[in-house]
Image (cartoon, rainbow, N blue to C red; front, side):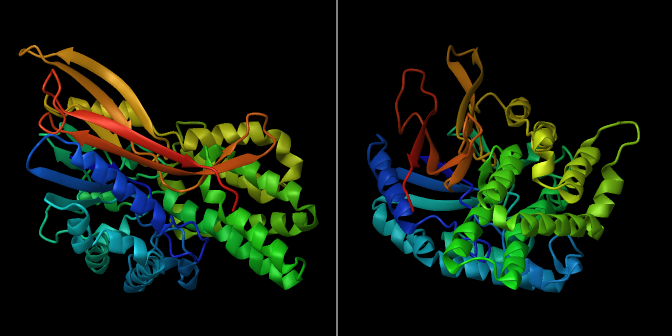
Length: 434
């Protein structure tokens, strides 16, 4: 029995307290235990596969303690590695009760008479966790991994008995994957533009904004906490291109701070464009033969934020949203089909995360020589963090917490007439005032 979860985004809480409560994981393990007990095979086996973006090393204000060259898009310095370790240690501290649940001892006590194991596949927000040896050791400890299992820290997980191939999924997102189609370690090491966008824009906006607000002493303590929370949630807006409307909405709700917010965003956009990595990225990706390529779209979006006042270009938001949607467009379903073409006929399921949208997408079916009908699907594991979604009428955002996971069974675990692996997806949503 294989269980896939992804996009937990454990953070050090310097840029917001978005960590998932331990109670959610207790409920998860209880549910998994129930599913495992219902399987029909005598020798029970369970693998929990953490499918990337488990640790979020990008959404951390700790990086602002380092010079540009000592950040993840710098020169891969020792200072960068030390800072990454500090961030991961803080993540461990803030979520220790949760990580204790996945210790070898606790899992063996929970799943008695079951061969239980955890597997870790990195994503884009925890890319450093497989690049830096000290971080690898910490991840092994936190997730209860077997150090000698070669499946850990690979960029994909496959199991032919379950007919499944799984990867985080950012390889089909040009904004968050800089490598080529060979998917080598060198490809995965290449820094995508999405990394500095996450830290140098999305994380820095609330960081700098509240430094500027404190200097002006223009908010009560209660209002400051509320506003800071709202701005720290900027990375959780879905779809991504609705982020601009989220900013506009925050300005409208806090008109007394309009000038401070606008000046702060101007400052951050200027700093982003001045980053050596960003300048080099623009130069490398700008195609003279393409009049409106990815670089042009990014520069246009940043220009609007940098040069225009938020409310004065509200009417242009549709155009900017269109450009942002193109930038964040990831062809995960087309990518799943491409992956299938490289696999043998025993694989039925492509499992990915990254998008934060749980999904079951039928791709194709065929009848094999032995009469079995193979159904091929793309399954997405969604996310567990709270996301905010724009209202249909465009007058605000509503957020809720998520819990999503995918289970794949062998025919022995779940007998069926075609004697093929079968799957289940489970989704929970909670809306609660906080």
